[in-house]
Length: 156
Image (cartoon, rainbow, N blue to C red; front, side, top):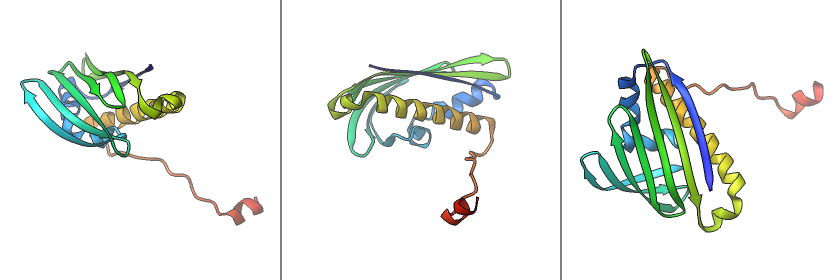
């Protein structure tokens, strides 16, 4: 079982954060392991869809949207089963975003549980950072280090 919890305070009202996270078809923009999405059905606040994770792994999800409150993702088929919950809490002019993932990994991935846990944790941290930047209206910035050549390393 893989359990991951990540949270971040976003300096934007809950309505603005909800605008970003409720666009569930934009998930590949934030969650790097999600490569593509195909919606199968939509009934009110429930969506059933097929997602491709990693390179070719097909999974099935049932998503329940709780307006301005939460998104519940139930992974029902594929190499990942379990839940991912994104919970929003208003803090006045700011919002607390909490992500809780509780997955069971099957197939060959179960032999690499530690590596997969680390990768999913990094993905969740990056996703909440990108959601924060989008909701706050800031561009995504990746700090860069000056590259050094092997000759620079020899010279000190």
